[in-house]
Length: 111
Image (cartoon, rainbow, N blue to C red; front, side, top):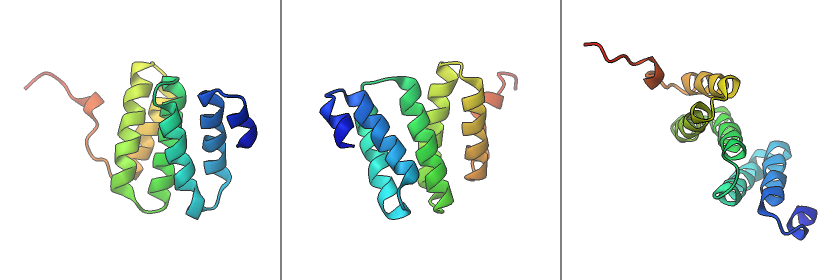
């Protein structure tokens, strides 16, 4: 993480936290996900959505399904906006696994 911070570019530090979250024990992973999301705040939408997706997956695996749904819904919205279909599909699948029962993309305008 030190090398990324030394570059002075938030994107690299965010990516370092993202990777650290994936490789850290559960007791440390969340702090890295949150740090990455803070650093992604004004950055690349795709990277932010990927971090939210992975954080949501982690939350679901740690049985925090309500928290997971918030992260996964946000990730899905960004992926849909970016037309990143494989990533949107993955987020949608994770939302269902987290107990999401309504998919707004299936809604129709007919009565």
